[in-house]
Length: 252
Image (cartoon, rainbow, N blue to C red; front, side):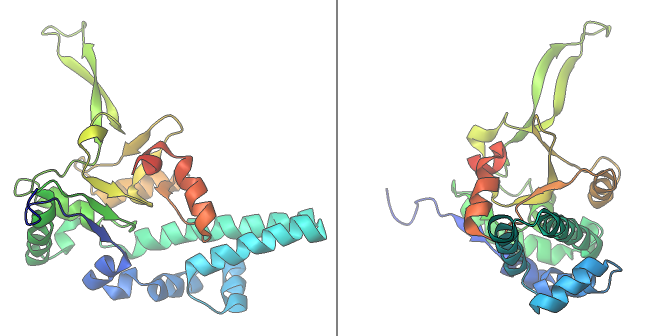
């Protein structure tokens, strides 16, 4: 194959989101938001470790937990550490959703189109797009420019369930929008999950625009104690463990 025509793949990191707005998507912005909440446990935690790096804090909490269990045999301390870790994860998700642009129309059209032109050189030539970002920016760009791009498939689809025999014209019935039906044609991969992906325990579902802004639907699910598929572990081995125990993340 000519090297000029071979597929090229791209991996997005946090720089992609920060280039849109570093006041929203930097670790400093997220930690400042959490520091201003009334969660006293997290305020103490940030004060003690003196860092804005979420992954470092999660990694230290994991170490503290192992020390409490293995060396101190202090179940009470171990439970406090688990509570702090869960609280940090949930507040991180809350911070991302509250700081996040409300809807796609907040993203200037020229920025969206410029990003789509950049992605076109990959997706139109069988290249894959990988991202470790949780936010909706890439998803918005792909959906807003899907008629100009090829291969924007993220693996999600609706399984055909057959004909509805109760309807007069036997209309076809489809299941929920789940990951799997189009995985063999998948070109877009959220390696650490994303705000719009939810694990029901049976399948990974994708939240979509249904007349209500996408972020509003996500916030509603979070308020109902349903949390997005997001890899928040600090340690690389724990990240891998989370990934391997989720069918979507493992595939990506």
